[in-house]
Image (cartoon, rainbow, N blue to C red; front, side):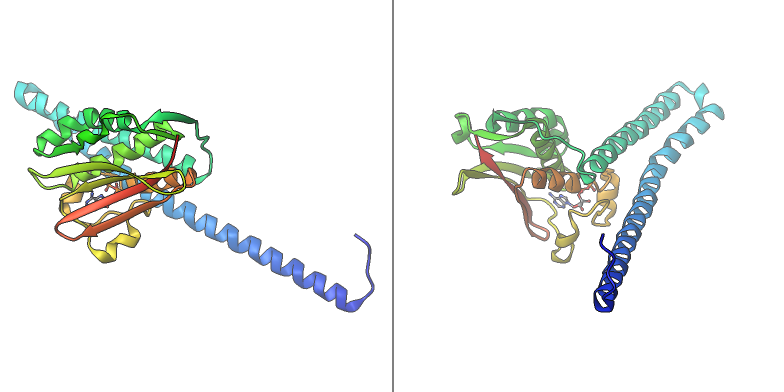
Length: 260
Ligand code: ADP
């Protein structure tokens, strides 16, 4: 850069340099804060299932192993804990990739009707346990093509339908519907008649690790990452996600997609 002797220009340059540095430091501070908070949350999430597994194994080694029935029961519980750890680690892996912008979307044309059906097949047993009916209107017997990352949209559907079952009422319903929008878009809705979400919690739903702190939600054993993953995937597609809910009655999550 040319050396300037003009005092006014020099002062301006120094000021700009200082402001830039200050901004840089602020950004680093925010990142550091984010990193610390993330690590704190992660270890907190991992601790519960780890202690569960450790507890059952220790009790088994302590003598419970000698009783055939207890042995089976405790081993099954320990296995459940490990299963949960695997889910959490997979979610964490996904969210860190999404938040770093480290995902490539593999875009293709596919039939969304078929994808919804496959997700229903996958979650039917879970729904049956609560006697929840998964509904998808007969009018969707014809294929509906969309242009998106199929695997990621499957993940979105799994998370949303799974939530509608987890937070749905016994004997309730989950209904998926698809509607055309203008501009070559369509909207997919997942509606349940479950516990609903209080208004003041709605803005926080998509935050990492956020859960409406109820014992019910806890026992369902989510990581609080599901909706955050969903939002990242939809936004990576340049699409939008919406939520509407009536507390105690129903919730509806919906997202847009590009038609194929
Ligand atoms: P989790 O692993 O806890 O299910 P999510 O990110 O998927 O995490 O959801 C965050 C929270 O939002 C849940 O803990 C639950 O309280 C609330 N929630 C999500 N989906 C629904 C729904 N369909 N009905 C009622 N509450 C819901």
